[in-house]
Length: 418
Ligand SMILES: [Zn+2]
Image 1 (cartoon, helix red, strand yellow):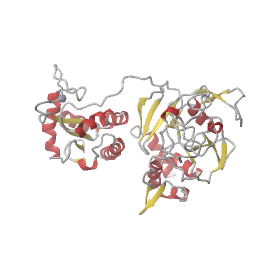
Image 2 (tube, protein in one colour):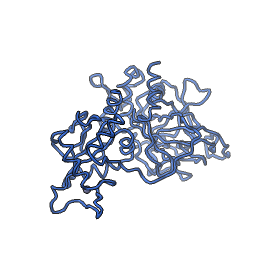
Image 3 (cartoon, helix red, strand yellow):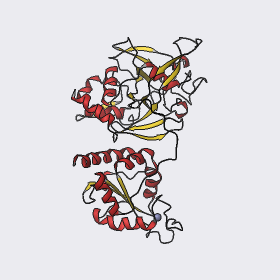
Image 4 (cartoon, protein in one colour):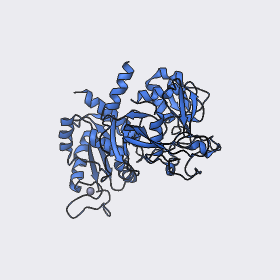
């Protein structure tokens, strides 16, 4: 019972589940902090439901109403499932050791190296359902899954009516299961990937207690008909095999809300000075992310180009942190970065160059020195205590997950000190 309450609280905590962007397909993408999943909103309404036919689909689809819901963009990975096992140790009973993907080393679960991003297939149907409850959701119902895969028009395959080929789906039995998201051109009308092929996915159907209806076909599926959205098969809840995985759905607390429209991409908000960073962080009781950068540093360039432009990173920081960036261009005497005529900085939108110079000079006193640029730190709201040291934050621009995990720990710490 405690576990259930904890997971429900996690799912509704706005810091743990938040809007990131409208994707290419026009659907809302949200971020679920607990397991690091990108989750897509499918708005309410009817979809064209095709009746199951073993051969060529000839019967016409019938409209079927589905309430708005959130669905995982990809199949749940071994890395996500390992987080779950470390958080809920008794869930280990749902893991089948003869199926590869997960291993336990000194009582800590981890994905088998090289299989972190592969769909988890080593867990049973019960394990899949337990994971889904842990993130505050459930396995999809069959109609939810079909709508996420085939859209309101009830496509035969997630991308449309063209037969599957090796550019759109992993099937045919040669390559084994692949990392999730390996076939972006096979995306569904909402932007969900691998709904045809890779791992077959568990769904729940009314009147089928104790079993799951598996859909979408897998890497072993020889025939393209079995990859159709309408296709299905039944499997016992206690089974785990190398070709069956799952994704989760979550209830939408505001089902009647209209979908967000695609707008201008959000940008990272920077504090104008070290003092205002402290004032704002103290008022909001959130941590300060301080990044100290140089002109001549390639890793600083990557940090700005990748990390600072990542939609999840921006959404998390703007909501849960105060970001202060100190930048020194003095090290590039011959070729400093561009300062616009009005003093505006070409690297940090919204900041003047003199402002990031001043942040550098003032904030470096709070952290002392750093070994490798960028010097990235998380500090308490008063800007005096270092909560996350420079070495705990990877320098790679793509290390968004590592940053968000550390940021979330610091955020909790500051929120708890209320
Ligand atoms: Zn500048």
